[in-house]
Image (cartoon, rainbow, N blue to C red; front, side):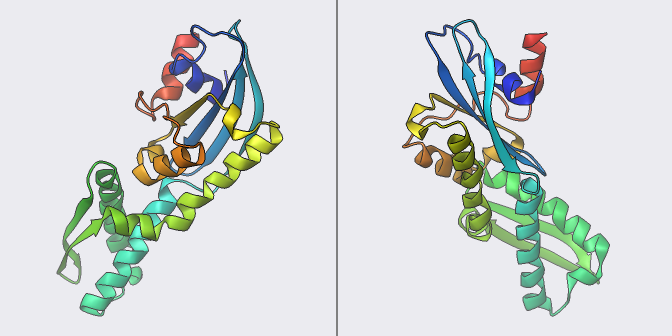
Length: 206
């Protein structure tokens, strides 16, 4: 069973079906990004109409933007280059991953690392607005594969009846907003923990 189909089943999109339904699966994980368009008919038959994506876009890229931003901030404050110290960068990256997750539910996240470099403690805050600014072009670029999949499937976006989010990075509010706006304010399917949607759907299918 392919992943997009598993995700669609997890959301019960094959239930109570009348006629055909077009579903767009937006799967943004840690390192890759996939968009699939499926058509489901009344007999619960799934047909993948189009796929698109970017094998080099995901949560890690968003982390990198925050890491680079904070490396610059550290340089401004302390005139030291963290890039010369792989361990400091690793610790900073871990803190940035945590901050990114926090920013999905809060408008501000603290980054607090004791003795990050040459005994210097690094305490700072990152706002959701700043994070969105740092990653703005990356977030917007997720719409290109959506448009490309719609073209390949020969469907207008108004013909998509469900949009399903999969993958941890789809928790980012700005990404949800861009996608919802693109589909003219459509409500997105995000009820299941996005990381677990595929595994859950495969289990239902089995």
